[in-house]
Amino acid sequence: MAQIELTMPKMGESVAEATIIKWLKEVGDTIEAEESLLEIATDKVDSEVPAPEDGVLIKKLFNEDDVVQVGQVIAILETEGGVTEVSAAEPAASPEPSALKEVEKTIANGQVTAAVEIPRSSAEGKFYSPLVRSIAKEEGISGTELDNISGSGSEGRVTKADILNYLENRPVNGASAPEAKAASPAPAASPKVESTKVVSEPAPKAAAKAPMSVGANDEIITMDRMRKMIAEHMVMSKHTSPHVTSFVEADVTNMVNWRNKVKDEFQKREGQKITFTPLIIEAIVKAIKDFPLINISVDGDRIIKKGNINIGMAAALPSGNLIVPVIKNADNYNLVGLTKQVNDLANRARNNKLSPDDISGGTYTVTNVGTFGNVLGTPIINQPQVAIMAAGAIVKKPAVIETAEGDMIAIRQKMFLSHSYDHRVVDGALGGMFVRRVADYLEQFDVNREF
Image (cartoon, rainbow, N blue to C red; front, side, top):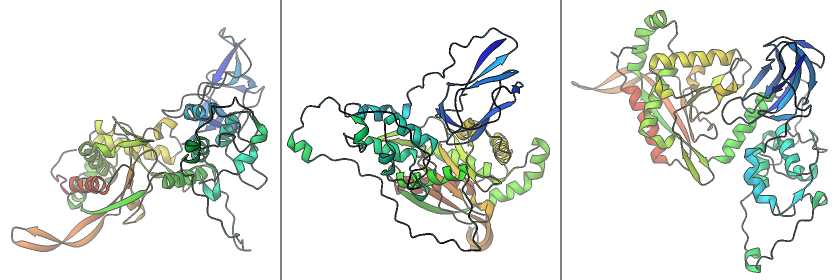
């Protein structure tokens, strides 16, 4: 008999950790190769971890709700073949979370705190996610200190961004003085520096809410985990980026006529339905090449200009929740390739078959609100991107057109494009020119093009 270590798998770029949400097997259970052993969740998507070989689960090294770093050993299996030896029954040492390295440098000279256990809910009823509790434990933040952090999440919940922001501006002695050990005294600062010290403005406190009354005929629906994450991500985005939205109405008559002309032949030849979404994405990709400074992210006072064009496409799930799968290197695909990518990601999203890598790495996002008959939308930026476009419903309208015989009124296919962008780094000129350029590409669609 041999023993093998099962580690937390890598789940796409920028995903460094996951939360164990459910063990599907107990110690002593027999498991077959590729059979799911446990369910995990990142801040992006849920997935299952399969067993690499047939065997018996002999030890679980983490419990449900534990946050585990990628690469850490999470379980030990006993198998029939091989001679793999397990060096230790204890889990591998946790790698230092990269997101906290700079924070630790900031506070290392000021205090040393002991690790403390944080309950899921405080005495006041505030709920703390596993990730927030893990960071609090790592940084020695007590339950009392955590209760005093202003939360930007739903109903004032403390998010990852809130606690990291707090750590960057944490008082030298901390709010949890009873737990803090005395540090070596630092050189005395001059009175002038001490009296004029400036700190970053903290996140605004959640507005006080009037007591919520629940009537006899009301129904209370508890948010599922994905809805909670969406809520926190949206609030964080609005808190992070000053949103500005520009609108353009595009005449997409040529595009509509072309699709209507080729859709049957396209499906027969390619085995795929062609929707308007890949046509819109094609125009967005062209516009990004014209205006590459829309394809960026912000890191403090640095602007990160992205080398790849990875287009996220917002997709509604049957549950009513929202997910954003990503077409990586979208500029490398022709229209047929984009159509197949769009259809594949949309189908797997609806069937809960997306992997964490499928929804990571986006550099720009488009959402087709026209799918629901909406003519306009003001989308919220999908952080850490700086812009997002909403495509409205295509509607027939009377419009003035220029002809050789003069101006005439004709029935045209019209669509609104809404472009929300981060005013920290994208001004009205760039944001407005970009959405106008997308509209230009759609209006100039070649009705005689091949697919």
